[in-house]
Length: 545
Ligand code: DGJ
Image 1 (cartoon, rainbow, N blue to C red):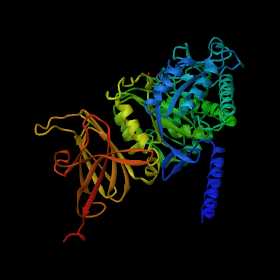
Image 2: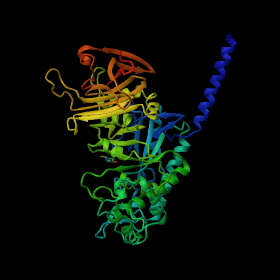
Image 3: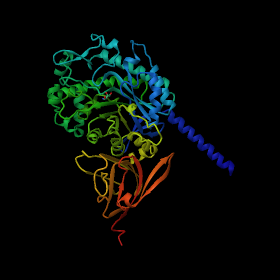
Image 4: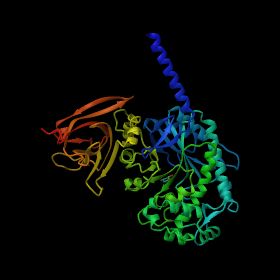
């Protein structure tokens, strides 16, 4: 008997080792599951609890020793860190990866992962991260020009030399990562360039650009777009005329921006392809989003905005997905614009002030596999154990505790999320899940009914019939039976405040009476991010006496 069970143990251990070996050979990659994009690392969906460093926080090795432990304490599991072209290739053909290597080693030592941001030819439209041997030689490395003929500090998308040298540097970086990372999971993904696009009057006005702009739109672009007409967003649909010939004829008022989108995307395809030929990690492009009333060129014209993403997809098949950097208040609107078939949701930059709420929306409602507030290294850790933690840390601590069960629930469609602010257009918001409606309002005092929290958000995760885990703060939630699922009424069976460590749940408090408005509502803590287990019941016509 003993021998038998040992044999079973040994053979299952052998199986586990074989499975691990199999997955160790596989690179991190993107998998679409029921329309949800997952990042698969070592065979498992991986939830990025990210944080992007400030632009001047990653330039030395010593900063890694200071910043990495702090981020680990904040429950950040993945650091988004710039890698600057001028830093790794200060002289043409001679590379120095020492700072990056130290960051990677320090992160690995704390079980953290990295997403590298390639600040190559462009960062926020400009080319200030290009090495000085590039910037000081505009003859060899041509610039985009303004409408009055001035060369800008923006490398031209049309120069084959610019493209070649950026591609060589990026390929050298990817080769180096491949050679260094035997674990295959410290560097998870690459962002190619940063918030590209042309700042100026709509498009590059250099003689070369003017000549191309007057010429024909490439035939493959017209053909690909024509075959995708039914999937167009309104901005592209209203402008596309496949009978035209020149850029202006085919794209009308959008011609400048589409021309730039095609040129940036074609250039980035070359850089991405060169990098993937060395080491094929997932690679994405991020976008600076237009502010209301801005014209193309006031925001980076031709960047991967949702309006003309189909142009990017046609030109850049090596780019795995596109991501918005969201600093504007209508976070949910911009996320929804990127929820297009085949595009996984990952938010590489978000405004820190609203990030704790928006993260819950992103993971819960948009089924994002990752989220990352900008300048995360600026957060301050609490000095004493009983001092209040930054809200972002509270949210990541909760998400960290469910990081294994959240991705499968996302893929099964068993999550929802919502955000409310005092400035929201409506005072209530409702989401439907698992046969129930969850109607949320901002937390109020009793009996005065004054608003206790200016912001509130929740992520709902269903685990079984009538059982939900709700993470968040600042909301009061009422429940009803979802009439689309069937007639009847709903009620609360139980509400507990819970925590989870190493897969084990602990009930911290059973909530009753005044803390549930006499069994009628879930009242999230107005100011502290907490997790609750709510069990609901239904009375349907069949179960009525
Ligand atoms: C967006 C950029 O991508 C970041 O690098 C940073 O410059 C932020 N804007 C805000 O400062």
